[in-house]
Length: 111
Length: 116
Image (cartoon, rainbow over the protein chains, first blue to last red):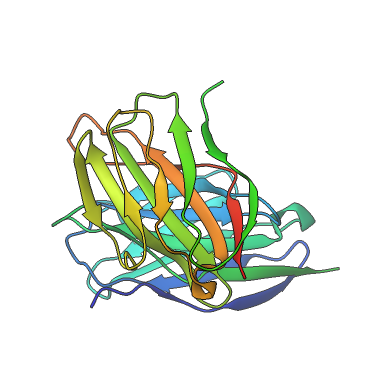
């Protein structure tokens, strides 16, 4: 069945770069997303990448897409304490518009 | 203000007592969806709807019902709640892009449900 896999935890020192990885299953997914969930809040779209792109950069965020390996990554440059959150990778399946989320990666910032 | 609202935000109920969680969006979005979030399991889609009178099962539809009689509302119904439905529930909506696909999901604030 469909599955989106990501590691559950990541610890990074403040000021370093964070890289969160994700693998997905549907090679025909049109959009792939990164959502951020801060404590006690709902999810907010952080960034997304269209399937015909390899890379997307938005200020401190860089998304890399490797379609051959079905691998998506999110790089956060100069990680700040405000980046502490759970990050979810998600895909929307092309065949039926069902949305599959990963289990989320909890990013912990070390001082 | 463009938003997705859910009510109630918190609910404690007992096994078997029917309940409805309402969801409403004011952005004229076609796509609406319900998720449950559980520790270690992430976010799982329960049901989704691509337009009025169109609903489809997500990954975990058992024990839930939905309806989409109007574009703005997408209530989640638990006919006979059980303790394994204790969870944090999110409603979300999404616009259709010019290319006919769905893009960003806008999430509601969440409803924390406890079934005793």
